[in-house]
Image 1 (cartoon, rainbow, N blue to C red):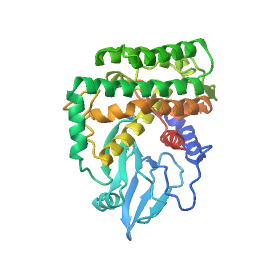
Image 2 (cartoon, helix red, strand yellow):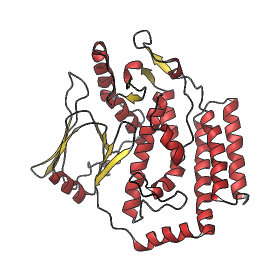
Image 3 (spheres, rainbow, N blue to C red):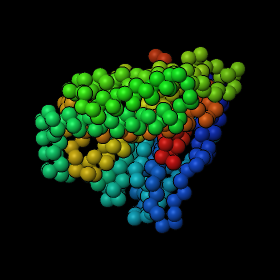
Length: 357
């Protein structure tokens, strides 16, 4: 179901998309002249076009509002300007089979994210050829209780250590922050002391630390401009509650009803696709998890969820830095008829660009 945009708000919607389309990311890293580009190319809107034109890849970005100057990108084979991946944000358009071949030859994946931030498709790139030794290692580690436990403990310790960095560097000094730091340090200590005996106990310990971690965000104020013109719910004035970032809880967070949760979904979607691409490139089977369970449905890349864990908090930090230093406007978001919050396309693109800067 598409977003609700009242006719009277069309001008404001266009203005905010144009604002984010032309907004420059602060503090971005400048590439040296002979250095390969590191930032992904992010596309959005309706009518996105990818085609091979005279041996080059010609990309026309989509339309999100009117009037809008359409952006074109032309890439040559082997160029240092080639992006490491192309990300399509919840839009529409077309591409040819020649494009898939072109992207595959250049080793560039095309990732499609839906409005919930979920990677619905990853195509192109260098293809998948699993490394038998690495896949066997995944199987053996999963099937050996001691090795699985050691792997999982190391995974969660690295995740909790990353959470400590985010708490100390991004969250203002407040009682809930100190509680979260204390609880996270305690969880790390228990794991390193060998006090955790099973995967279930490890999950419970991690869930408790995660609850205090997200509670430390709760109530942080957001800056909203022009509320007289673009009212927002009272619950949007501060950062609200979010469930833990485990797999089962991720399901309940999909349909975000708060802007920050919607942004986190996009951030985790970017991390998911990036981790998936890296796993395939390194020869691992993205479906064969060690800590997380293998599943038969198409949404279950258990190894991807394993390797995402230590990186989540750094993406949290990127989203928090963005929302705590940026003035927002109600026109940056739309609500679907069931109350799900969606980001303006160019705001979503700018957010993801800031995460990679």
